[in-house]
Image (cartoon, rainbow, N blue to C red; front, side, top):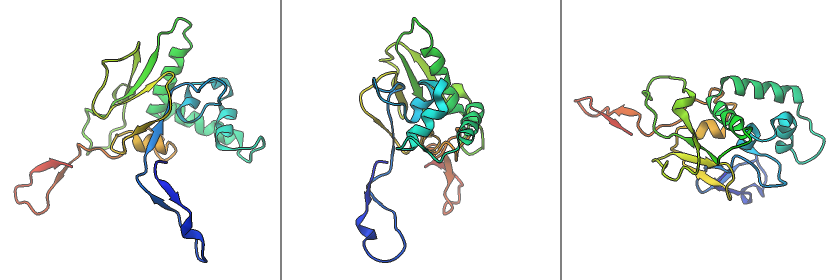
Length: 199
């Protein structure tokens, strides 16, 4: 989550309060889990997809018996696979992993979008991400997130990245649409010239 949850606030009587100190942010790890570990987060789209529903339920619960309905989990996964452009990017990576003679693969989530952020445009897969074959050393970019096949630890995604909200809350952004964008122009209400400046 990024910030620290302050549990001291709920010591007295009264309604439960959820208070967080610090900055909330999303972290993302490698595309494949470490050896012997269960898949989590974006790894669920790539690793062991034959047992995807079971893996998704296990990632959300700590016990062997869960109250989650596997049919509902399967239906939600199908909806995301069909409509969510970010899910399609990770599925492309999975198809690349199925190739026996595979070179290292990285997924690059592109921070700069070409379409107008003021209009409601559903993103396309090629606008959101690029599948990079090889080590991708020279593929950096401003506000881009590069996810490696096997990495060490988690990397922070800036809350200003357009895909931040869709990665954090995939069921609230089922199409993988952009959240906040820095380059959205705005008009200054005090100005008489109506000049538009990016936020």
